[in-house]
Structures are given as structure tokens and as C-alpha cells.
Length: 330
Figure (cartoon, rainbow, N blue to C red):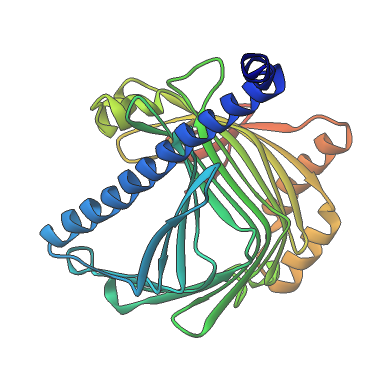
């Protein structure tokens, strides 16, 4: 009778439940072990900074996120780096990694962040809670970086205010050419403290900026010890796949494929596509910043754009050429 009851106890649901409890226990042990590794890694990093003469302070340091994540949080963090003439003070710093992947880290710094920069400058910003930075390592090297900034309110030197909406920055290897860097930058609105010097006719509002680019052989400079000069001598190229700027009367799209010489002067081609050329010419006339040759250039770009074809110019030897004729020198 007793033997029959014992056999009946070990049914399939019971066995599955015991297996689940066993897996949960093993995972819990792993998580707490991993939390200890994260905490110890943070302490070792702080010791390394102190060994370099830097100061790292915080009011509390803890690891949470059980069972799926490790969330390292420092409250009231302060990092003072005299060797870099820089200091950062924030309300909170969070570093988040999934429990099964330490090579992908999400960083957040909600609240107010204050920076002391070299030459006595100061910079502060406050981003919303959904703002974050993403870092991905592969084979010990940082390979992917991303920033998402739905809203950002920043102040430079306590007087120059900037506001940003829907900001995004991404850097990663090109899918088909892993030695090349793919760059993507965009935002839907940027408010500047004042109009650009010498181009006040542009105004203070950037309605849109989009930059998609590719830098050839970038990771050889970052990871393989190739110097920037060697990179230039190898005639590696920078390609602007898409460049859109909408600011005041200027509504311009660009494509470019250039290489740089020792003096960072470009050599290649730039294609231009222009909208609202009448508004641009009118603004430049009002500002007294255009001559007949400048109007002719803008009209040529506008005419090509109206036909759905961007105007392509050659940039070489500090001059801009079209059909063999020099349009401008710089």
C-alpha cells in the first residue's frame, strides 16, 4: 500500500515541477554569483581610476535586476579626472546587461548631469528617462555604439541653451564590409542659443538633420594600430550616403565620396540637391551675403534638382569645380 502511494507521488507533473525548482535554484545561484562579479568589477575599475590620480565618489552602489538582468546603479556619482581637466557629477548612473550577455551594456544617466570641461567651460544636460546609450563588445573590442535621445535639454557655460528632439546616433561595422564603419546621425529639431556666426540668415532652428555615412577601413585604425596618416596615404574613402539639412531657408540634400590628404583637404565628388532655392536666395540677398556668381551657382543646383537629378561637383586642391570650371576656392 505504502509502495503504491510512493510510486503515485512521482508523477510527470511532479517531476517537471521538481525540475523547474532545480533549474530556478541553479539560476538563482548563478545570478547572485554574477552580481558579485559585477560589483567586484566596478570596485576594481574604481581602484584603477584612483591609481591614475582620479577621484570616484558615490553615495550608494548596488546591483539589482533579478532574475533577467544585472543593473549596476551608482547614486550621486562624481568622477573627477584632473589629468583630463574634466569632472562629471550626476544624480544616478545605471549600467544594464542581460544576465546571459555581458557584451552588450545599456547606460543611463537620468536626471541632471553637470560637466566641468577643459579651459574652464561647463556643460550640463537633462535627458528624459527613456534616453540611453548602448555599447556592444566583440572579441574584446568596442564595435557598436548607439545613443537614443527622445528629448535633451543642455546648457553650455550656464548661458548657451540647446534643446534636441528625437536624437539618434549609431556606429557599427558595415554588414558586408566589417572593417568599415557605418555612421548614422539624425534628429528632428535642434534649437540653438543663437544663429551661426557669419550665417545669421539661417536662424536658430534646425528642423531636420540626417547623416548616413561610411568610413572605409575605420576599424584598422581603432583596433589594428594603423595610424591616421597611414590611413590617409592608403587613400581610404569617406562616403556620405545621405546628408539632409533643413535649417531656415536652406533645404539641402548631399551625397559625397571623398578621400583626405595630410591636411584633411577632401578630394572627390559632392552631389547637391536643393529645395526652396527662391527662399535661400532671398535670405542671402537680404543679408547681403551673395553676389551674381553665387546666385548662378544656386540656380544651377536648383535647376538640376527640379529635374530630379542632383548636381555633382568635384572637390580637389581646395577648389570646387563643375564641368572643368572652378566655381569657388577655399
